Amino acid sequence: MSIQVYGIPNCGTCKKAFQWLKDSDVNYEFINTKEQPPTRETIQSWVAALGFQPMRNTSGQSYRALGDDKKNWTTEQWVEAFAKDAMLLKRPLFVKDGTAVLVGFKEDAIREKLGLENG
Image 1 (cartoon, rainbow, N blue to C red):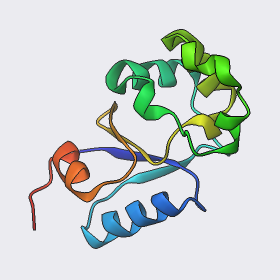
Image 2 (image 1 turned 180 degrees about the vertical axis):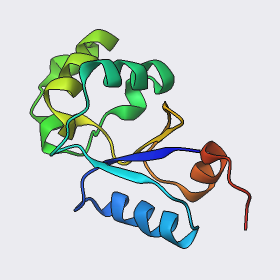
Image 3 (image 1 turned 90 degrees about the horizontal axis):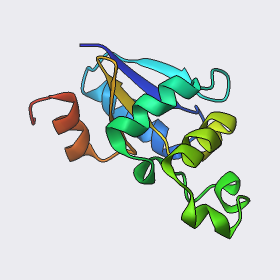
Image 4 (image 1 turned 90 degrees about the vertical axis):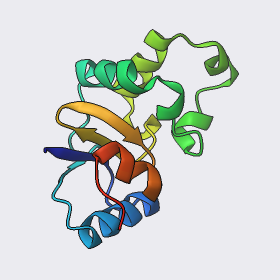
């Protein structure tokens, strides 16, 4: 099983996820989206798997700066926006075996999406 976690190192939710992964002995690769922004094609595959709505970082400055018309944006417009500014992506984003499986961090959800047993 290959797991990548996309985010930024100083994100509080990412830090919680990293600690949980460490405590659960889960090996993963961290990709800093500030230093290595995902490609448009990668973002398109994530949106295809998860939808654009859960991927939006609605609490960030980048999101607030977009203006009210963002409420009516199409999927394609969101893909473009995510590709131009990775800070619009909710963090962390988990990719398992090449497929986006979860965005954000909730322990029960991550166990299920990564196929880990409880305990």
